[in-house]
Length: 510
Image (cartoon, rainbow, N blue to C red; front, side, top):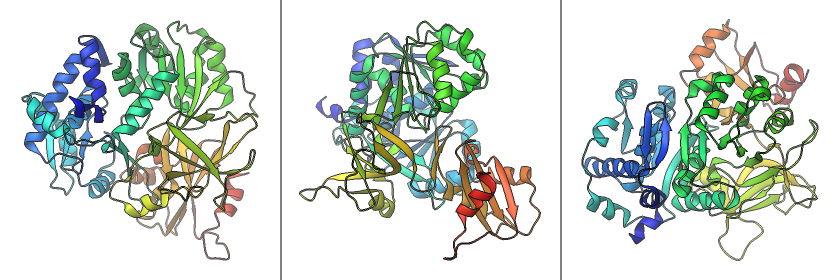
């Protein structure tokens, strides 16, 4: 079907024709073949078309544990021509409510436990049980009719990130972004039908796009590694050896934990060939431990915001870096372009620091139901006045070195990356300020210790443990600060703003 090629689900269709009964995914509960995945996804898609409003303007939340069932739901939604929206199964209900208010979904796919959690929300959104959908009936005619109207620039999925106003932002990614990204991945790195991918990322984190669609494109198998194993590095290594995992794309925090656990030196992973990492800065100390333990592997430092369909630049690590050296984020992917602009919107010279701006087919369509913040982040290329040329301002400070590699410096604003999660510190401040007896809140990031420090202006007695428990009602666990410091009155600058520089100097840079 010609129109199918406009949708990212074409990768599953083609794989099911080529690989049929080969296993594509395995989780703790079992396996599924390419053909079975297509069949079950088409059934879910058919049921969605018959039960709820579907189409590009009708996104559906998938609120399920990290499993094969989630993937079936995602693909089912693509068959119904609706964008899918992965949501953290451990999300606080207060944050879920904000997400629903912004998204206005046509439905939520979940299980019985998820339905019980959602019962506390004041929402009239349709709740659909996955087990009922997948046991429905397949209607290929309805699916074909839905797909006939899909354009490759339509939205494939929406991923929510932290927002500075306390309202989550839904990054809207196109089918073309997914298709071009995966084509670049497979043409650049040694991945084929014999590869076995070890999946670490949650589905609401954009690295998961690699884990899913690379398997469709190549015929590879993806192992959904049980989350509990990441708490036990030795058992994790045993699992990887037994599963013959050959490719991983993990966040550095996980790689750091494994390296610090002292298990790599005594581990043999002869099948491991490719190690990709992205989401935050990878320290050279731990990277070098990995490289010494598995010297035959290819190591790649990847960089890219969710707004770039996961990855925009990459650097193949070809030598050992000393601790004082900065690991480059490299050069742009073939489907992307990079500009480094100074404060006057002029192109920076080699070695000159500026903001990294990116463009290309991987750039997101914008933020869902948020035209104002979309207009600020996705702008006309100031270097091109001849035609419409949209770029995304990442807010990241970088420079280009003599070798043409981009070097990451840090954030222009208060947005940070911590353990693979992108966090707006303003989002955390908004949540903290809403708690009783808090006059004001200020969150700072200690990059050296990789921890968030939250300052609270209050005259009341705050018990840290109880406060953190309260905070977890409003923000995910990864946003809860490592330290809380209370004071009667914040220091202020002459302009009346909180003196963040003074707080940092006194409490963090000591």
